[in-house]
Image (cartoon, one colour):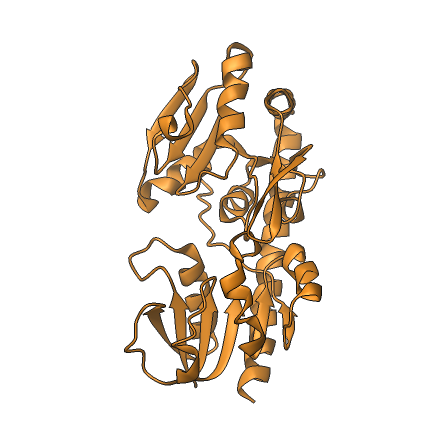
Length: 308
């Protein structure tokens, strides 16, 4: 068993799904895992330190081996300057794998990632649409709201959750839509399992927990046709929206979708026969579970190599 420090800008307050996923993966391998704030100058020495998204030059010397798990949409120049000092860099997505060709990385390992399973099998899906923005303003909320402003009378009810007010982006709530604001994690499962359609037209993602949560709950997920979003959702069991390239976020190009495409796709999803909707939901869940297995196997191999 090794002592592994899991370093993040978040802490154990429950805000970071990434922290929980990585903690479960590493403790499942028998390691002693300690959460560390990247600003904590008092971090104890350890066998390995895994830095989630945010590296710390001050903490790196305290670990015998180091791992960096970046989000390419948050990969700025300051982080890139340190990237050649890590023993391993773990890529969550194909986008990160491609970016690695341009970066001085010692060893890249494509691990993918995983998302906690929040399925509640006894919950009945309804023909309503869920858009969960969380803390991010990059989930395509403006396009979603505009779709309901233009076509709301012909669309099913929309539920929006976000940790920020719509006015932050100059948005007003359309008819046939409900804004819940921030909801705690205990209430999230209810929404995930009672909405048949999850609308997540993200402009960019590091991994895409919100998208994968929908798949695991058997929902029809509508998202952006760009990596890593379209690595989760395929036409066989979900819906992909044509995307237009926009500004940069970190090292990736953000994407924008058309509100009219959102409306047309939602109408298509609503019209699916119940049996087809059920089959597609099962296929999406199977895909998400398979990717989680791949992640855990990759972490097992990577840590074995790191600590050998």
